[in-house]
Amino acid sequence: MKFGKRLKQQIEETLPSWRDKFLSYKELKKLVRLISSAESPMYGKEDAEAEFVYLLNNEIDKFNGFFMEQEEDFIIRHKELQQRIERVISTWGTNGTKPSEAEYRDEMARVRKDMVNFHGEMVLLVNYSNINYTGLAKILKKYDKRTGGLLRLPFIQKVLQQPFFITDLVSKLVKECENTIDEMFPVQVEEEIVKEQREAITVAGKGIFRNTVAALLSMQEIRRGSSTYGHFSLPPLDLSDSDLIHSFQLNPPIPTV
Image (cartoon, rainbow, N blue to C red; front, side, top):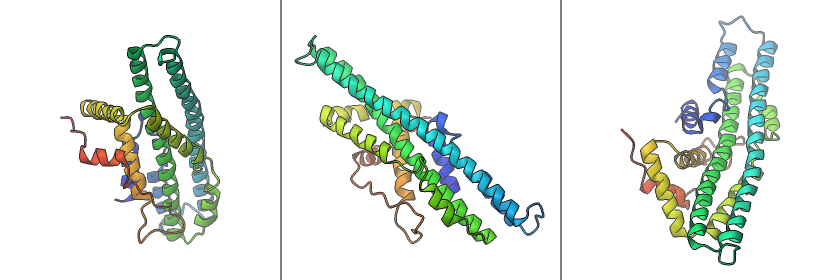
């Protein structure tokens, strides 16, 4: 699948409020075509390169602003979820101030649902970083190839230092969230959650679970080692052992009509 088509698909499958935060790949591609056209006297080489770099810098500012805002929100939400679990245990747990098996079960079910959705949003943000980085690398490669410029190496070196590219904190939160789910909630209960989410997807045709799976598959495709894998490619991502992917592929949601 060509990158432009993959990016369009990812934008359609992400959260609605995120859709204008992705790389303006189509517009940048048009500009490269215009700049490199021998029939276009509009740009001198230096002016064209300056405009292209200006637009790319604007895109990076957009990525950074959005990514850091989401990252900060995730830190707060992660702490709140941990505090909710502690409150449920201290209030309705076996040794709580108001022991109640029914209340404990109901409250923990709500926490589980919110945590699974939270995990999904964080995976979407990691995918957001991956696909926008890949788009920048591809458009810079296209620019250098069509104009004879040498922008890709210095610009990518700059990109590697940008907040939107550095996903260590979000990846850590993803892992901590997964560990909490594994420790606090039995596998059987998790299967029930997935079933509930799958049913919701079947009814609505949309959902964080479906978007998360799409994001994981996209990351796997983007980062898969191949004959085109090179210095500017992201490392391969192996999802062969992912229960989420395996479950989704064996039992995909029934599309609505």
